[in-house]
Image (cartoon, rainbow, N blue to C red; front, side, top):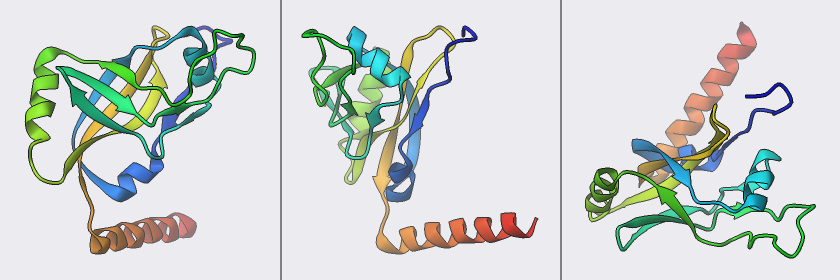
Length: 150
């Protein structure tokens, strides 16, 4: 990473509150030039994003990468479907797990690796029930109190 390039690491905070993570994978993304520039600026929203398996490919939907401010008429569509790059055996494994009731694939983090490539961490996840969310809130409050005392 060059000394002028800032570190990009965008997390989906809502995901860990709403879901239990079973497996986590790191996938490449097929992007256009203006999309990678917007990601480097940190203009990404993963709040409602999810992944689907379609014809042996994994696509991410509802991932909002804002339009690049200096883009011309070649600027990208912010909410378009983007293809994820994973190995075939990983895709087959995820597709077979999705048949289980209550499982879904959600993006958890977007970052730029050492080579300057955008990567998306996706998780096979199961939705939390209301009482599980209450437990998460209690844990978070206890951690906050503990850090205040230290």
